[in-house]
Length: 210
Image 1 (cartoon, rainbow, N blue to C red):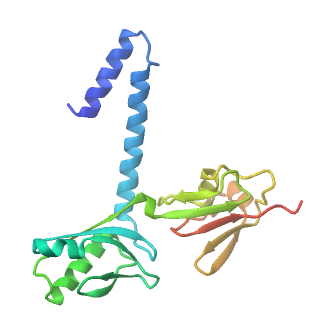
Image 2: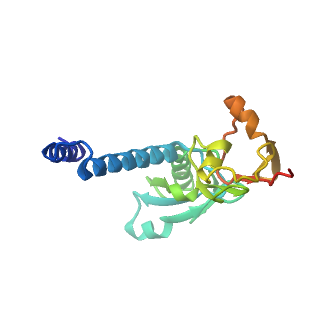
Image 3: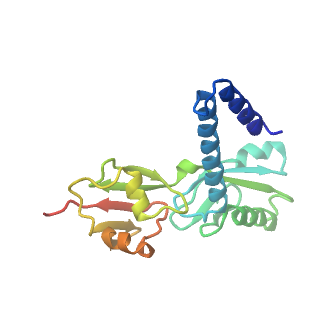
């Protein structure tokens, strides 16, 4: 029996003794289970996500002399050209790769240049390293944590929804040097028009003129 199922059985048993399913123990278990599921889904999504310029990652190396581990292991940020600058080998392009493929690429460079014989690279993306900025006429302007299913409409909802003064027909999506105007009312009538967001996107909701 797992720890989770054991605690669930205890919670239900405790609730039966109180003749109700609405007791603190069961509510606590449900809340904890929901949080754990969300965390695992987020972690799995990040493991499969494509690396992009601006991403910060934790990199650890193994299979090398112990004196070298601290020299290479650390936190790195992918530069604007999609490269990560690593000790002994310089810049390696990893933007556009999933973390697993980036690990293999970095290991290959260390081997090809005969720096290490059999390095083992592990890259970990932190959930808080990716955001979408939502501002303007929303109830709670903020940085919204990026998830692979994040859209313009869901990001606005995460920021509290539109304020009473929002112009829902002229939402500005800023991505890199480009600006796209989005009509949310058209998205509501046809959800297939909803736009998938990317890390670093900015969503600006203008004030209505009327």
